[in-house]
Length: 167
Image (cartoon, rainbow, N blue to C red; front, side, top):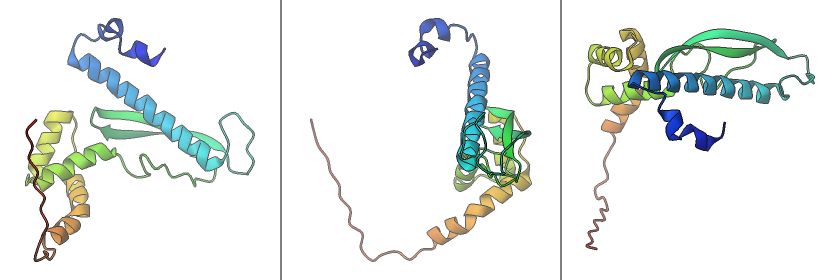
């Protein structure tokens, strides 16, 4: 299928509701993440799938991992290597959230929402539960930087450029 075909009217007519479209986008995101993970493993091992391994480390199947993204929860297959030295960058080991959702949590926290309000908002908008302890852990990781930025010493003079124009 060509990229142009994805945006054709015939293709888009198959989605009758927003849920249908979100389901398709979630599957597309899942396939994309799995392809990226396989590409990361190829780079880590130094050879493509179905080629002969130049070292003792080689592919060793997959492990299932539940992740939380802006499209909801999904289960992906993360490739493994025999020496367990592969550490994916897109979704690191022992993490279950894609960066986009963590950025949303940090943004809501920066706007003054409480942890329980953020938990409720995530449940309503993304339709899955994130524990208050997870939200606290995410916000705590950046709170020191936020406090340091808020308490930074200000310069005595700042240059401001204001431009206005009429066309």
